Image: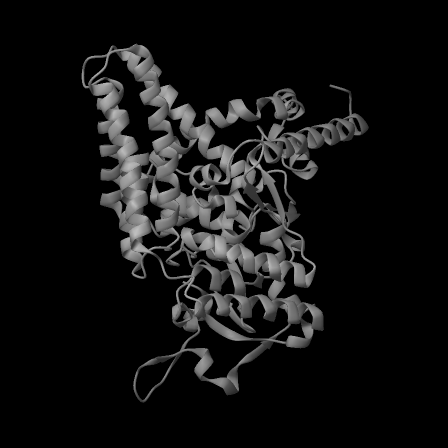
Length: 488
């Protein structure tokens, strides 16, 4: 519970608790510099619409530890992007004062820009773009289950090795498409009642895909809040977990230089340096293995066996699983049907079954991570303490994907599951997938009006940009290492 909640005032006459915001005469004034000092989960102040809230240690936050990504900062726009109307009512008990507006380092042009994109969001609400089309999502769910049925049938009724391999590849594609559906439901793009979105997420996430919803929410919400940001410090939670890929991949020279911390006494430094130097070569092999890591982390979260990040560990220790039975049962049943599939319903040998498992697992990892990589990898990275405003952060760290090089736009739209409009999705994460194209036209016009650049590339060019970026970081790292020590 944040200290703002602890500091609520009890009215003697009624015995009721009154938040600070109802006692305007006692409202404190804080400078921006004072707010910036409170930037860790244990000491977290956040600003919303000019008011200051103390949410220190509030791991019980319904959205999890993502609340701490903006500790010591303004959360106005990221809060609006994630929450339903009326959600601020829950924050009243944490109110401790107001910001001194003259202390905020924003000029008139920046304030006008921020008002402009907030007005754009309001316009999109009035246009009905945030209303989901249930028939569209029914079609996506049914068509995806048809992929599953086809893959299962190919294994159930054939012992031909090539048919079985094709079935495993098809199942990998099914897993990828499950990811997009779980993503839409868990971003609450489909249902106003969030519990229905969560339940659908457990079906497509835990049961069909083998991924823990709680693991995904913790990781993905943090990514959305602070895309491509490097943490301020080891104890802060303002870094993007999706670029926390060391020692395998470094997305900036600063991140590559962190090998010195990872190596400790230096025993492992040679391995880390080798990986960074050759990361453009290892990129695709790493993507092939990505699903194995995600399955492992999901299993650990669901069954209380640990977590990969300090953020997730603290959330699990204090808050625990939101739906313990669904988490555990969903993943257990996932492995039951997967085991039946890869064993050919009892006909295949363990070795043959393991081959099918690895084919579908690695193909899924590649197909998912390829789209993730196109979305953000190779784009701008920032230190958390020097992050730009919400709009510029989301736009400059994100890449849209278009058709090109013989790949039709219709295929890109289906394959990427809405994330071909990654810029627009990051600005409006609760916007239904079918509204993204209309939203993109508005976003493009707004960016042009205000001189903000956004980036688009087709799947081939975008992938080449990612590889070239990895290579440029490797080259910078080699030069930096030569300056500081012996050559590799």
